[in-house]
Amino acid sequence: MKTLHHYVKPAVLAFGLIAANYTPSAFAAPQSLDFITLSDIHLNTRTTKKMVISPTKTSGSNLDQKTFTTLLTDSKIGIANVIKTNLPNAKFVIITGDIPGHVGTSSRVVYLQSALKQLKTNINLPLFFVMGNNDSAAKNYGHFIQKNIKISQNAGWNDPFLSTGVTCYKGYPCLYQENKHDGEGYYAAYLQSGLKFIGLNTILFHQNTGTPETSPKELRWLSDQLKDSANKRESVLIGMHMPPSSEWRSKQLKEFLSIIKKYPNTVIGILAGHTHTENVKAISAGKKIIPIIFTAGLSTNRGNAPSFKYFSLTKKDSSSPWVIKDYTTYHYIQKKSSDPITLKKYYSFDSVYCPNKNTTVGDCMIANMKGSSFTTAFKNKVKQRYYTGNPNNPSNRHGVIIFEDDMSSSVDNDPESQDEAHVDDDESLDAHHADTNEIQQDEVHADNESLDEHHADSNETQHADIGH
Image 1 (cartoon, rainbow, N blue to C red):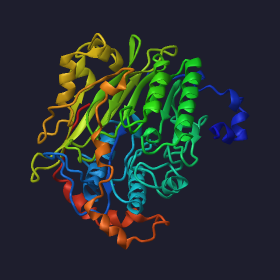
Image 2 (cartoon, rainbow, N blue to C red):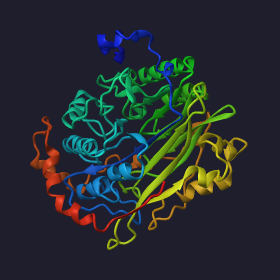
Image 3 (tube, one colour):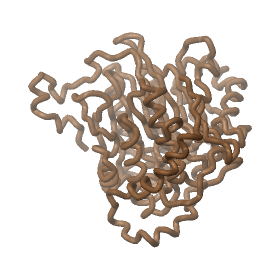
Image 4 (cartoon, one colour):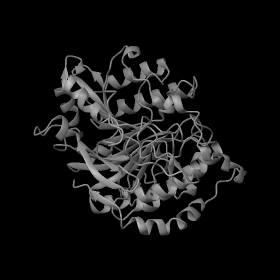
């Protein structure tokens, strides 16, 4: 394992920045930082089955290419254009895993590369990638391997974890330390001065994935990173695909919680995906809590509306910690197939859970607790939003949980784990792509060219109502 200190150019050292003693928090920090999160795209570029935007139930289907093009590039509702026109303060995008759909390995590498290329081509911001269970070039719930690096390179990414490949000393966001050997796939970066981002590969903690060597190694690394940041009085935001749950090995789950609970003044929040649903949970750490905030899927195979989030972080002054001030969820709606797809601001956390209080997400969650649990009113509000405001599948179940030491009685069973063997109906098309060892560099072009006419037509019918 090498830190990126090893790659600092001599010209940088000439200005007196000694790599071994570099401390990002030594530089001035802005008072706010905004960014976007996406999760669970589940792209299948070959399927002819159009994804239903507002499904009536869990479908298990993937996101088709035409719909992905609309949601990404449409002039009115496409994420890329909405960022430019409505959310111009966003500085980067964090993708919390599962970019390709549930398909066989040969298709997975093609869809992963295609999606990475389209995201980088159309979104004019740095992109972070966090490893999901669909993202291994080896198999579903597989390891990060060297082929994953080649996929990202062929997609035009300068690094598998950060599209720009910017290393620290050269601006923000920047890569600080990477673990890119086979069986690793996790890293640390700086989002701003004094604000570290840790992208974990929690698939290594899954009951059927990690090994006695890989899982403890990542947790030791995490502990070292948090200790280092605590000593520097930095704030840490953690990104992961699979959140702490009964899907994890019990030993790794217990150790992870033990590590996190040591740093309630350092870890300001955890960003997760995997469930495809709108949810918040928390890890209790004495009198403080660490929020776990889920970004629902862009695909709708869990009965959810497609969505993404817009986060706002703030710090009072140079000596104060960063905090998650608020987040806003945006969702796509198409109640009937004959209706245009619309993009709307669904809700902001602050306005729903702590209206008119001007607080932070963490403090708001504490204010909504009674004893060691959230209030019934808070839980009901979360339940109402579980399917991200899908009008055809109203939410009426699930809720929030404080992660206690006894995880056996406090963890939701994750529906994603019940579907890991699902293969899309179009998997038979793999016969036409027998060469699974070579990843074609311009796989995307043929797909996109056939979509030009569709995209032009869709510009006339879509509508965005997302005032921020």
